[in-house]
Length: 176
Image 1 (cartoon, one colour):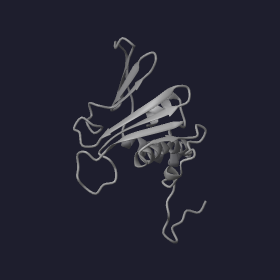
Image 2 (cartoon, one colour):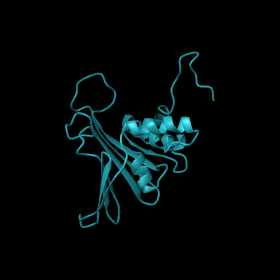
Image 3 (cartoon, helix red, strand yellow):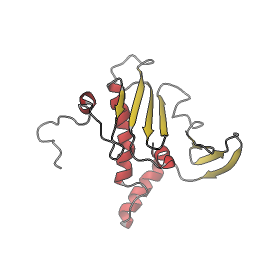
Image 4 (cartoon, helix red, strand yellow):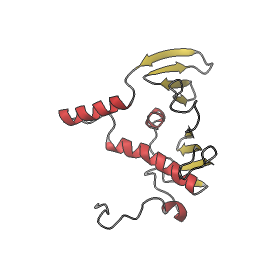
């Protein structure tokens, strides 16, 4: 989600819609094995996320990755590299860089050792993980969520708000 959010230069959605279900595995998991979520942002920008945890062509296959599509072309990111295409589908640029969990772990540890900010700070992490939570809430409520574009909070939806927080066991309540 980080790459798409940064690529579009967006923070919080104004609407989230999710659909899917448990179509492949008959087990006690609450998370669907097939899911699609659409996040609509101000200025006519959208992110669509698709999850097929059971498919060999899903996110764990290294030949597939993330694609960003805009009004002037597309970028496909796989592993540590990318290919940029124009609107006619012609390759116009390629590049490579760091990728994967190890790079994130290294950046975090070096940030601690060097007393510097990491590449992704807590606010960026919050904005990205919030998208995941909103997608799950939209799925669980079988509907479309309206959200506040300035902070990502739910707008007038009591059912969805019941998923916003949880009850904590005595002694484990967060102190804010």
